[in-house]
Structures are given as structure tokens and as C-alpha cells.
Image (cartoon, rainbow, N blue to C red; front, side):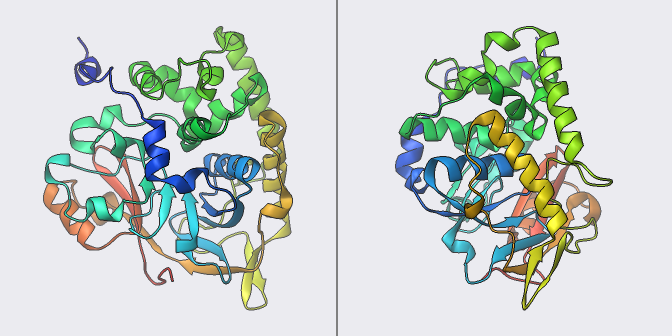
Length: 341
């Protein structure tokens, strides 16, 4: 028996309780909320989806180094989509591995994440014991499952390439099949009325060659939007060094420059054409932003090992957000030099 099969023993019978999630986090199916997105394909899909079904407005973007937020809007009035925010008064939805060791859980853990929907936390998965079992899909997939409990989510075959592409899910399917199957079972993907059923149990994609052709078509359309040093499936808002990017002064505020807006709108229209989720351009803000700069670092950069003691010291720094990117590293964000109001 392989190591992952040993890890998966006795983990096949638990099921997500979508109804309970909605009861605990009713805001996820409420209309007219404000959203802050991660500026990659997953965040953009989540924004497109919530704008289509619940008329959410996109008020800003956050990538761990920079946040652009409509002037006059407060973070606590928004829902962060495709990232977890470790603040009790901020609502968020993400899918990264966060906890190092569930046997030495930080005392403020439940409080800081009480408004965060997080699949690994739902199953009490941690990096020390369960890293190979971490959630393998994108935020949009669990979001569709949750919303479908409240409002029927309609998908057809055309949406599949975009929903396989995001967060490299098409690669994960064949690299970690045991774990993907375990999570699809947990998410109730076998049920015909679950939108995940259309994505992962669709007869059109039962042959590898069909999947390859559809993904190749999507890549070519994405590549037509790309420019040197910028892929067409994301909005770049910061440099590697943490400086803001694709933005320019707009009076006392900032706006995303026109070329970048045109590129991301082309990608949103591509996603819209495939998913049939309407791109409502009036719901997306591209200017009038207040600019926040944060400090992003990692255990690797700090030359620290991922131990219980170091994790506690890290939590004591009150990080804004983070993700365990490997079994030995965490990338994290601190509220400095700026703080969220």
C-alpha cells in the first residue's frame, strides 16, 4: 500500500455539509456584497460567478504584496475571494493549507478564521499530518458546490476547459489521482445535480485526447491575450519586489492602466463565453483605488524551518494571510508598511 493510500484510510466516508456551511456563513449566498479578488484566473472566475448569480461588485484586488481597494470602501465591508484573511471581522473564502499542526493549534485560531470558509480547515487537515491530502482543486469549485445548495448552478460542457485550467487543476488530476478522487467524493461530485458532476464526470472528456484538444484550444486563446512577461489569465498588480504594477496615479488615488484593463476584460469575456456567466462591466471597478503596500516573505526567505515553535512565533506576528506552499515553507503577508483600515 502506498503512503497516500495509508493516509486516505478511513477518510472516504466524510462528506461536506453544504447546508451547514450556508447556515454558518449566510453571506456567501446573499446578494449585492462587495468583493476583493485574488488577481489570477481563480479569483477572476469567482468574481465573475458571484457577480452573475448574486450581483456582487468587484471593489478591489489583493495579491499578498499590494491591495487595490475602491476609495471609501473598507475591507471589513467586503468578501475576499480566493484567499484566506486571518482576521475575525473579515469574511473570506480560500483553499490553501494553513495550519501546521492541529495538535498544537494556536489559541486564536478559531476566532481569527471564524468568518473564513476553508476546505482544509473544514476537514481539520494540517501540514504536518495531511499535507499530501490538501485540497487539490480551485476556490471556484467549492464555491459552485456551496452556491448550488441555495441556487441551482447551470453549467454546460463549454465551461470545462476554463474550470480545468484554473490553478492548474488539469495537471493535478493526473499527478495526484487518489487525493483528487477523495476530495470529489467529499464534495459530492457524483451527484447529478452538483455542478462538479458536469466538470469531472462528463462523457465528452472521458478520452484523454478530447481533453488535450479542448485544453490546447483554451491555451491558444489565453496566449492571444498574453504580452511579454504577463500571461493573459491574470492581472499583475505588483512586481517581485513588491512595487505596484500596471497602476498609475488618478488624482489622489490610483487606477489600473488601460492596456491592463483591456487584457483582463478580454480574459473575462473569454471566461464568460465558456461558462455563460455574464460579465457585467458595470460591476467591476478599475479606478479610484486606494493603494495598500504590505510585506510578503516566507520561512524559506527568513531561513527558518517549519517547526511548532517557529509557527507559533509566526502567528504571534499577526500575519494577514499566508499559504503553506510546501511541507517545509510558508509564504505570508504582514500589515506593514500599510495597515487595512
